[in-house]
Image 1 (cartoon, rainbow, N blue to C red):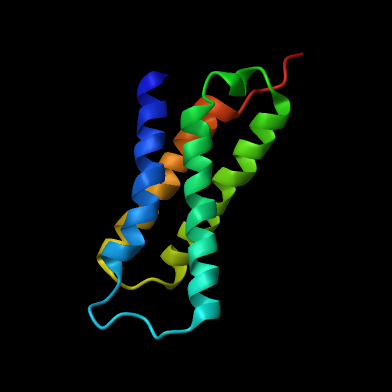
Image 2: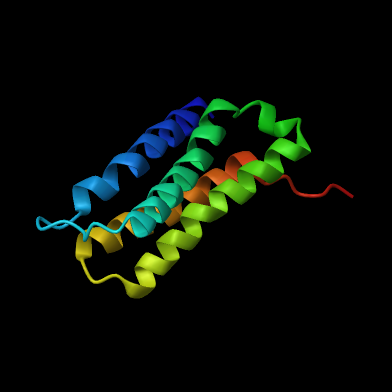
Length: 117
């Protein structure tokens, strides 16, 4: 359990760093609206991993916290699915697949609580 929480924290940091590493050499055009939207999406994607890493044990007891974690983990899954659909670079495709896999693993192990009859 602690290993998954540490992996989640590392993923939260890497989600913040990876877009800067994968940007082309010539960069992006200076569009403040697009840059602000991209920054907001990266912060939202990272916040789900950081929340799961920081509040791992409390997720079992709080339904509100589990719901928030599930919604925040949905952001990187949707963004990675869009990258898989539209991406062309092998590095981006591998990164998007890894993010989807890690998000699903964290959701199934730490967030998802089946209903008990």
